[in-house]
Length: 244
Length: 175
Ligand SMILES: Nc1ncnc2c1ncn2[C@@H]1O[C@H](COP(=O)(O)OP(=O)(O)OP(=O)(O)O)[C@@H](O)[C@H]1O
Ligand SMILES: [Mg+2]
Image (cartoon, rainbow over all chains, first blue to last red; front, side, top):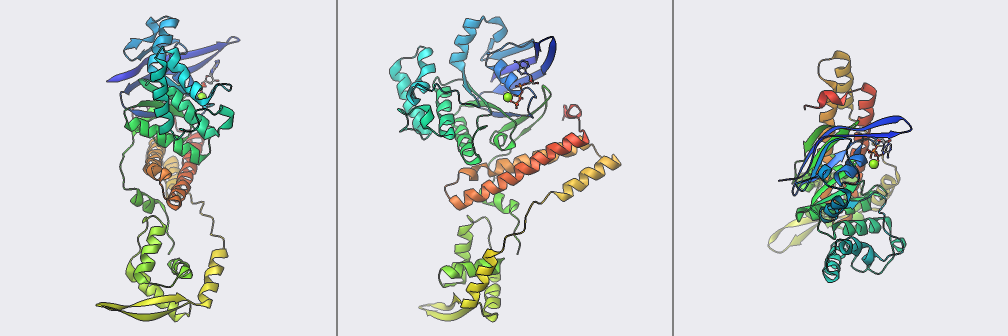
């Protein structure tokens, strides 16, 4: 079942009489349970697309259908309610609230969505555990490393068990090791059923997805399905050059 | 290189052929099997050159085996090898680059699809590596990270090829 769709989506930004055509007819169909990466160079429209998908901004033309709801048909407050229930968002820059503890940061969207505090706390404990942050609940964001902060941001995005997790360069500020760890965690959540769409310019990041969609100049131009399940040792043997 | 790998194994402790094979393969996460014949022939050469000494040890109910020990000369050869920087391995896919240039000049095939196919091949290789990037085994993980970074460089260079050769993505829209 398609849980997130766009139909001929265009976005034109206008400022000071200059028009920037950021999206030029995007057609996306995201199926439940998928892990998709949209990959393209800087400025091709990835963040713009993600904001439209989350209902944070509206297309100039075309429509976004989120969990069966046409976003164009909803007013801002109904859209906000739908968003809270169905979308988890991870930003490149973590965007944690500095004077709240890790636990409070994670809980916030759950409480805003009106869930019972005890249930929110239980889910937060589960998520922090799964993300290797079980002992960090009382810490403040500035006491954590970048990789840890990004994992907190993921916990926060998942607190409402969203229909889809949207992530914008989720490892943009991390070194390659912590980046790999964060992506492996996303893959684990996906294996447990979480639908994920991330956007990135980085092929290392995209390679964790099951499907990669290539974007150029506001359009999808190509895509590939990744073949899974190769024998890891054979993979390395194939890539390493041995000089005898 | 196997020669120095064997010296390196023997520098830790004396060992016989199968032990060397097992330890060497385990060190690289079993990614790179060596055959026992190669180990024996290399050991024989090392013994002839005075870099190791081997001694028959008898075993109950089993055939004798040769336990080898590194010599002073062997240690010196190992140290010399270890101290030499490895040659830079900034290997471009020359075969791919050649194809690209020839496709560009001969118009024999579509340049765009050539680049996209190469990109997909590299991305699949990156994807194949992902399970190893969080492997428990530190040495294996480090090896996988090295390969990941090399593939990333190849992909970035491919982006440059696309820019320079002006492969237009539109023509690939139906692919
Ligand atoms: N609020 C805005 N007002 C005007 N132009 C904008 C606005 N936001 C984005 N743009 C323009 O739209 C185009 C797409 O921007 P977008 O941020 O979606 O790109 P991106 O693919 O996310 O790039 P990056 O990889 O650098 O994050 C760019 O040309 C950008 O300058
Ligand atoms: Mg962006």
